[in-house]
Amino acid sequence: MAQIGLRYPVYAPLTEDETAGTYEYDVGKVAAKAIRIDINLNIADSPLYADDGIAERVREFIDGTMTFTPDDLSNEVRADWLGNKFEDEEVDEETTVKVLKSNTEDLPGYFGFGCIVPKVKNKKRQYRAIVFTKVQFGEPNETAETKGENISWQTPAIEGKIMRRADGIWKEEIIVDDIDVAKAWLNKKLNVGSEE
Image: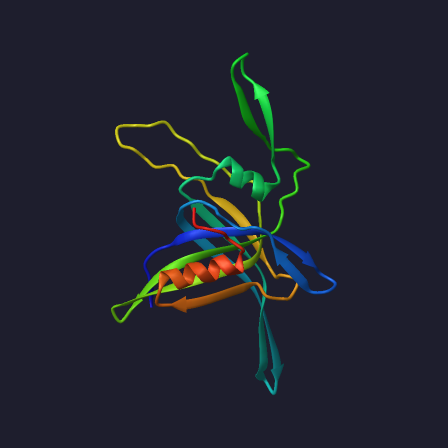
């Protein structure tokens, strides 16, 4: 099945009780429009050798890294993900601006993060909806360059660490024939209200 796109990136703040193994997602939101997502997983591979060969093998999820590239990473989303704070500052007597301040004491929270990956197999379109149950984002690197004769789009990318949720689950996914069903499932999983 060939993947042919990426859309509808959503997220919700995650609260967990590690001792009880319980969790809850707060109100979810649409993050932006999606351009790209790269997932790299760290898997433990532990073979058991017996009689000069592998008798058993355990392959287990440890953690992963997600690099998400949206069309725009708004200051509101950055504040959510990175724990940054807004402060009002006066520019002059008539103008006040909201300044996003990144502090060394900022603590990025944990979030559920989901998206939809359209697919095609045997001339049939399907939609793979994925939820990474616990992700913590970090301050993104940035690059900018001057405009030349041709326009070169410069889009931000932000990296997140994928972890296990308190109940041990690190990913959930479905494949359905209807994008509305995929969106409804993501909305329910991450407590997202009406589409933005």
